Length: 572
Picture 1 (cartoon, helix red, strand yellow):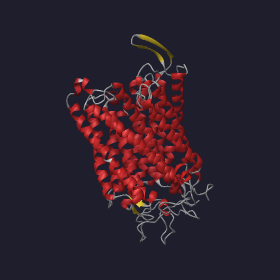
Picture 2 (cartoon, one colour):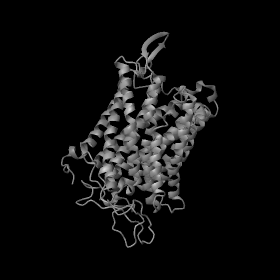
Picture 3 (spheres, rainbow, N blue to C red):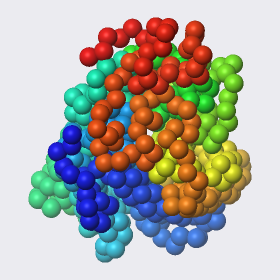
Picture 4 (tube, rainbow, N blue to C red):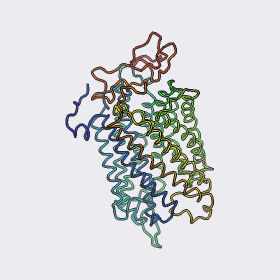
């Protein structure tokens, strides 16, 4: 049984809860709030680009670009996945809670504190940080360079340090829970692919975040402690400012040593979420279960050694650049295995096109478009041309924006009945899908076209370059209108989510007739998840339409039928 009793008061049940399910929903709601701020900033960016003069000062534009990127990557997508992982992992593996409930609760409230500090940077003299979401020195290292390089940048660093602390605490919890708290019969190769995605992503995060933590602290010392880890002497307004003899490139190495694994920390769980949805709505096993796991492990390993492809234009030795190009191209092989398995999972299947399935299918399309663009940016010869153009913006947003958000939407619609015991409206869900998915993909595919024309990103007024007067400029307004449609459509989702949570139609225990272990618990699950006895796992996670059995699905915890299961794992 659990080592903490069921909460009785409002604060212990809904605010400072130790229950992984409540904490998971808290993360999701917190990320939605931060997402609204980030979406508003995105519209400000697009308004400036489409109708110059809407934002008065260039430094304001740089601050908005910086904060939009920071919030989306670290304070929206990451906590959305933390919320889903918190909610699903114990239910998927047959555990009553996370391994460290108190640490789990603290990780969420440290995230809240980090969010407050990050948003408070807008209120500082000079405004929010304006040195880019990567915070490269020297722009981020001295108050002399930009208005946002003052206390706004300092709060940015502190907010990031607290976020990393929160994420590390959550990662340790995920890893310990997955490895040590699986129920009887739940071997590693009987875990759903979602759990495998979170496992690989957690290991990557725990290995990659410490260098960025060190970089943030060193940058803080450069700014306020008189050190010069990254700062060098500079001339500003014809005046020499002595800052030391540091190495700005060192910060880039430390940042991208996290930054590239972070892509897979975010994307791998999102892709693995799709396998659960596809299997349930095709009534077929996820294709290539074990090859997908091996491919996940290969991608995770290779993602730690390819960070330099973000730095091809820094003047690195061409032979080093060639290594990073080759390593980056190699990583596409295991990633392609996962993509092919996703496509094969729906190939010639009879699809049930409910809202979660629509979002899952759209995500597969986005993976294809985004992956093709990544080949050009991972190769030194083509990246030198595309670097700092809208080609990079389009690719990055297809993978880190579109793939992640569409897959998370698929997951929320799919597991909403488990969270609240209610169904979200299918009509509103499909309206949300048709307004969101096509417009999002169109926005970022068109940005690739602008990048092919050389349009430079992070530019306050792109009309200053005459080569943008043709096709590049003509695409700016349509992109902005499509972005407004995509952002506006989220009002439908918000209404559907919060209204359905309280007044939606009852869902029953397992409305999708899915096979994985979380559907053995009531919807919503009680304190402790599974009642007096934990379920025992008899087979793998995707026993749909098994041969020789009349049943449409064999749940993981169902007793063995007369015909032996196709899974050969020996129960623990």
